[in-house]
Length: 167
Image (cartoon, rainbow, N blue to C red; front, top):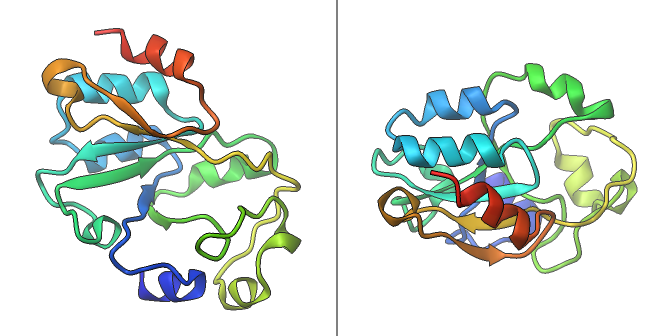
């Protein structure tokens, strides 16, 4: 985590997200999730959403920073050249490949050279759309169905409302 944050120039008190390459692995890693929340994740993921979840077991503390009661979770849709990543069976601390406060990198060449030079692995999936994931807060969802959009992004509010209005 410290290396990632140093490369990005990111404050150490800012949380990151845990990225899984398959939803079933994420659900296995978080067995304490209430069924209502797990069902919502099955409707939303994989896709362009990062969810904030309750974290009563304190899992993945490196990603939680100063708020161990909250966990960010991302499970991207993997198509085309990224599809083989679906075979990766372990979680990854996830962050965008740009310096803190700068626009997201859309191509490998857009990633700042110091980040590319210090990365363990570089994958080139061609030009990306440049729209970040929508961040959705589901921490209270199991109790009362309450949710909110923390950051607008790739998945619109209408699609979220449709997926999250189901029991």
